[in-house]
Image (tube, rainbow, N blue to C red; front, side):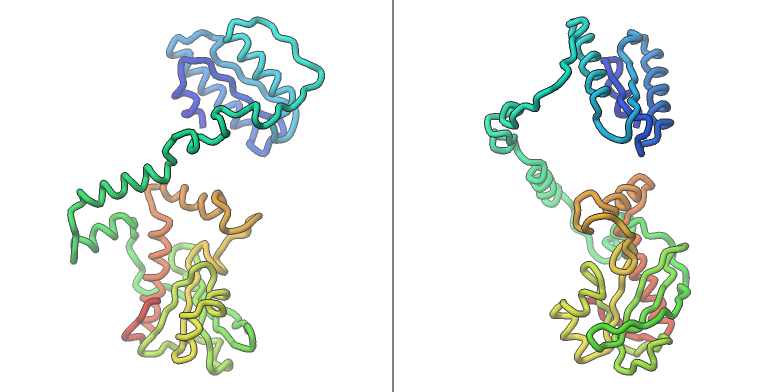
Length: 294
């Protein structure tokens, strides 16, 4: 991420790392080299770039702290400084940059309010779209790729939940991506094949179809009266990747996949929509004439 540091050029910058960090030390050295080259092109003083790598795993260890203090002292014109043998942590209140340690309480506007105000402003000036123009704009925003005519599917092993049998199908929606389709079976013996009704009711999950089919009031009501399908699109339900911590953590795998999609000029939400569209293509090919989405 040397570009973040290059944006500071030619002002002083120190790049800290660790020899045994899970952020590879080769990347640390590469960033140092790139920044050095850029500062040299700008004719910046040689002492304006420094790199230090400690002999530890990930963390802001003492050696890194001392290197940071030395660098700051040098550029503040303080000369050599003495490092204490032991340090005493300051009380939290002593570190406050505002009276209560909270910038919003000190009068700042939170970012979510600024975003909300900007969204309302854009809404007021946005031209209204309908019909084909709306469809076209939506497809553009979702970056939907061309669809295969009918995706291949595999019949997976059915499962039983609370004495109810659910058939499971892996639908190859894109490359090696599999969306998992479930169907509540009235006849468990038929759970090893995909038999599609003329009228299909397809439930799009909130988090995981296994949970939603049991806990969601609408899903439970629908399942009483009709064969109900539920779809785990990529990254949700059975398709969710293994990760430490809760799915709802703000910077988990879902956040990472979304970020990667943006970097590639794509849309993670759009690819989930693709999973739904490919599933609909399959259901139509297998005999569905009307499909209701919930």
